[in-house]
Length: 342
Image (cartoon, rainbow, N blue to C red):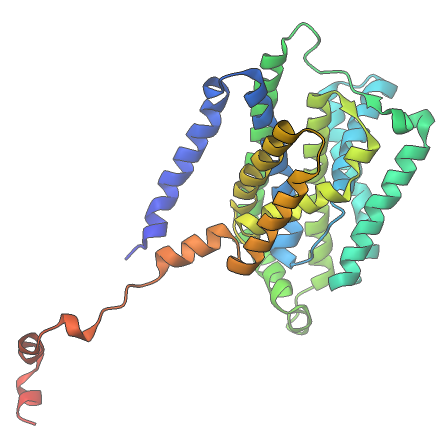
């Protein structure tokens, strides 16, 4: 018999798809639509992060490095070579994925807190490089990115088009995550997450598996960063290579559930909206950081597995039946003749 969660899943997917497709038409103004683009960008990046964090359990706080590299690679290919923006987006993501191979070979040899420190070191190094290399990257002055649809397209229409583009990349990332989750490769990654030494002793090529999923994660993260650069039109190394941005991705995934397909998406909606709300309400104050810190503490204390796993477990939990609900006469009627003569 199918559980309640199994019955609700198809209906939930259809409702989610319909809501995403209808959002640009439902948005009351251009600002709300732009917030929707930011949230979709967060969803792409958080889902990309979840390839590593969700499957292997390796927590990276420096994933913003791949987003920033994707953005700058896309922008530099357009401005320096005159490449088509969409070809530059794909080429930049592939370049970042190739760069992730030696980075992964070096960083995935350590675990736990050591891996976290290495990931932080990566984002700090990229920040210093892109701030100092002003002749190529613009340095602290930033880098302007030509918009692919031209200046004749009004800002609301730009938002709508990029919202759907982000949604398409998100759908592709979710599909890839879903396929891996149900594959032998995904089973090996989960074994690494639960006990890497035991998985290796059972014949799982742990390092190769980690490296492959690490490169896949970098590829999608770079796609998300490049798409954001095309939408926003300007790159600042302090913002692009930010440990805080990487922490947002971890918070989003933890909030929704790192072992869940749609966990990072749910976390991106909640955290992304909260960040934009506090920034719009309180300006340049750091109050949004306090609120997000409280939210993270609440998640870790009360829902350590995330919202979606907690709700799924509640729906699948069988209802206990008390013996008091059955009368003595009903129990006697259920007894066989052999039991009655004993």
